[in-house]
Each structure stands twice: as C-alpha cells, then as structure tokens.
Image (cartoon, rainbow, N blue to C red):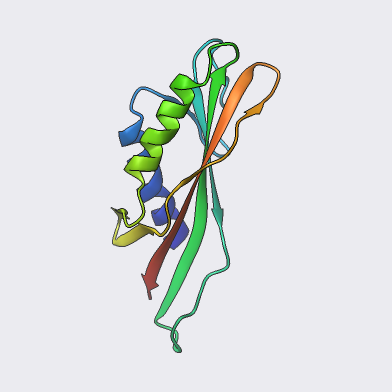
Length: 135
C-alpha cells in the first residue's frame, strides 16, 4: 500500500501546482482537447532500499515523470514557464504526505529537452523522490 500512498501524495501536490491543467493519469482514458495543453503523469518505482537490518523499515524510491504537452507552433515560453513552476514546487527537500507516508524530493527536478510529435511540443520533467516506510 505504500506505493498507493506515495502516488497520492505526489499527484495531489501536482494538481495543487497546476489546478487548471488537464491530466492524463496512468491507466485512465484521456482524449486531449485540440489546442489545449495537458500533462501526462507517470510514476516509476525503483528498487526499494534496505538501509538497516530487520523487517520493520525500508525505503521506497522512484521518479515521477510529468510530460507537459503543448500545441505545436506556439513557441516554448509557456511550456518552459510551467516546467520551471513544477521544478520550483518540487524543489529538493520538499515533502508531501498522504495517509502517514511522507515523500521527500531528493534532488532538484530535471527538465528534459523537448520532444515533438505529430501535434504536440512535449517538455518532460523528472522528479526523483524517496519515502521511508515503517511496517
């Protein structure tokens, strides 16, 4: 259940930063609206760490990918401004909690170079995190 709590903490924080955005969540049907930006959110969990011996504690780690998808032909200012806003909101050392689990951002978020597809200019933002889980 810790992965569910981690996801809830991070996704709630992201919606608070981008309240007017449309989101394409994992495994949820989503049809983008032409001409409107949206964010595709993916959570990738990494191998848990066991920094101490014993069964009562482990550390979950992972990366939340936020793909900002903007219509082509509008320049990069709006998308980069939004990426910087996310980077600031999820600054290194930030913490977000859900149901007794606190998620810590362990490094400055990374804004990846843009990728273009058929009709979107995409700016990926990577947010690396960890959470200590006590059993």
